[in-house]
Length: 249
Image 1 (cartoon, rainbow, N blue to C red):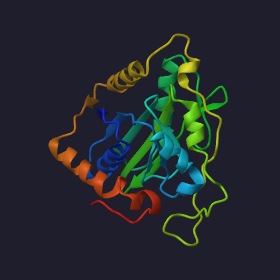
Image 2 (image 1 turned 120 degrees about the vertical axis):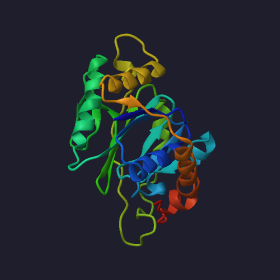
Image 3 (image 1 turned 45 degrees about the vertical axis):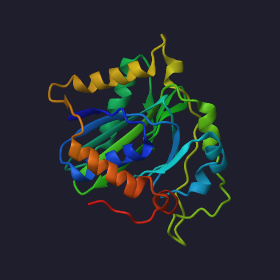
Image 4 (image 1 turned 90 degrees about the vertical axis):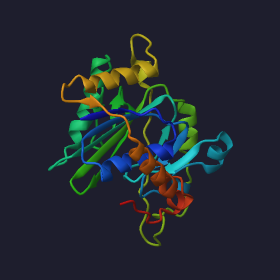
C-alpha cells in the first residue's frame, strides 16, 4: 500500500484527489488529510435539508459535495480524514473500519462501531464513514473528530428538514437524510494531551509499520489531473447544488 501524507487543506482538491486515485490509478493507497472549515454532504443529499447556508456564509465555511453516499459531515483542522483506496475482488469495508478502531485502541481509547459503520466512544460518535465502488476499485473514507469545534459543527449541520428534500436533478427521488448523533472529540478521552499533528504522525507510522507499505508523493502529472478535476467538478456550483452529471474518465 502506498501511504500519502496529503498536506493540502482545500476540500475541493482533496475530494478530487480521492476520485482521481480511485478511478485513474491501479495501486492501493492510504491517504491522510485535513481540510479548512467546511461541510461535505453525500452525493445523494439536499443542501437545504442538511446545512444552514446562512451560517456557513457568515462564518466563511465552505460547502462541498463528495461522490460517495452517506450523510453530511463537518471538517476543520481538528478533524482527521482517512481514505483507503484499493483494487479488490470482494469489498470488505469492515476491515478498514477495524483498522481505525485498532489504532484508537493503541492510543488508549476504547471504541466500537455500529451497523452504519460509525465509530463511538462512551456512546458518542467520533467517526462517520462512506464507501464507494468503481469497477474493481473500492474506497472507504472516514472522519476522526479529534479536537473539532463541536459548537460550529452542530450549528453548520442545522438544515431545514421541511425543505423540498429531493435528490438534486430529480423531481421524484427523495434525498438521503443524515442520521443525527451526539458527537465527542477523541482528545477528551485521552489520559495525556496529544496534539492533532502528533496523532497524524502516529497514524502514518501505524500504517507504515507494514514492510510492504511505503510513502508516495503526487507526481506532476497527478497534480495537474487533480487540479483539473477540482475545477471542472468539485469547485463547480452545478455539482455542489444540483449534482449535475459531471464525469472524469
